[in-house]
Image (cartoon, rainbow, N blue to C red; front, side, top):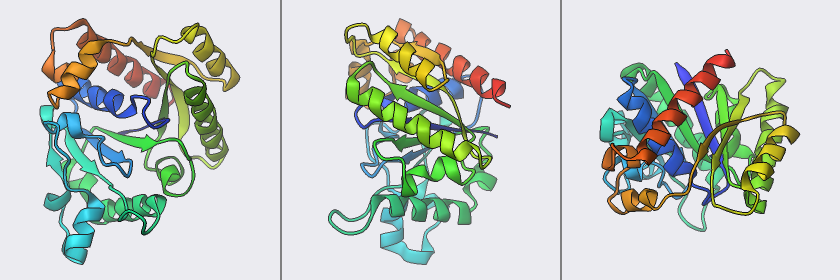
Length: 253
């Protein structure tokens, strides 16, 4: 099983990237599971017709110990197995602790044994890499970490922090940083800025994703680009990205 964590600053296009990656990998014949680890619970929306699915934490609040996998799993486009950790009631509880609770429940219910995914993708908010948000890289859930960034200052700053966190955990045999996914925002000297980041953190740019309006068009339809516009150049960009991500994962094993 290939276990991937996609990290990045909030609003950087991380979930769009993860969902198109999942869809492209599914097209290649892999059984893919995507787990959203953002309290907003919007990671899998474009795989599920634009709707928010029942989160693990919502199901626990409603059913307690009677929660089953059928309560928290939705099969999305391309057969992608979709789950969302969810977040606490606003103003009550800790989002990071909520992710820990959700992961424990997913494991206890035997999700991996039942669905037997070839590839698991964790889509994780990367503004703060601590507590529950570090779960995928510190507890053996993910093996390979990819950071989504643009050339914008705060996105680069967050990417550097994520890389530092991964490096600190690497010594304990946990996940490793496998590369950067550049989600372009067309800022000045963007490629050069991200190349410098890659050099600073001893990593590399795995894929460059151009800024195209077709991404927003697909999201307005509640779909990924790969599903909504399969013959578009942008869909092919995501398919190429999927192959590059797989190659990077294999290089690290």
